[in-house]
Image (cartoon, rainbow, N blue to C red):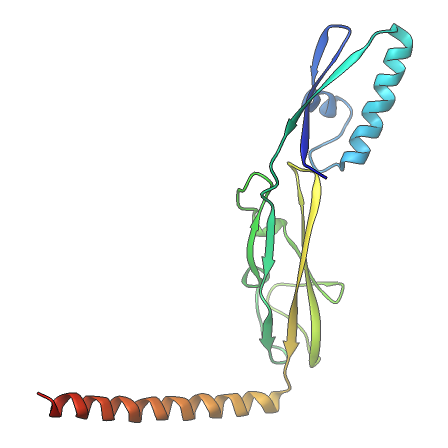
Length: 182
């Protein structure tokens, strides 16, 4: 469904801004299209029956530049991370960045509290969502959280240390080789 913005409507020669109409009817940009159109349709049909006039809608097409991406993550139990670190990027339908505070992040349906992930090991689904006030649509995506047992953490550290030691040896050898060539 293309994103459209209903900017004005005209009834009996009177042009009304949709944002003015929304304010007068207690709706804001976070309201969903179905709610907005249902209220607008009801009001206009009542007005049309009373006045017998016609009305014209003006629509403005909005290209959909929305995006939402999260990171797949490998952690260990009780490892701390902030919600903002999980969100790779978020843009609204106008292509502008979405404030990260407006993006909802849940792990297996539970809201993510900043600085805490999970105590259990295994694979978990991270869900990201936000409501775009310009297209009046939800944007959702997901990523994977893999929580490794603590034993694997020790092995990973050992592998990192071995890799660093190997790199140091290679660097020493390279330096000696370069010095001999001088």
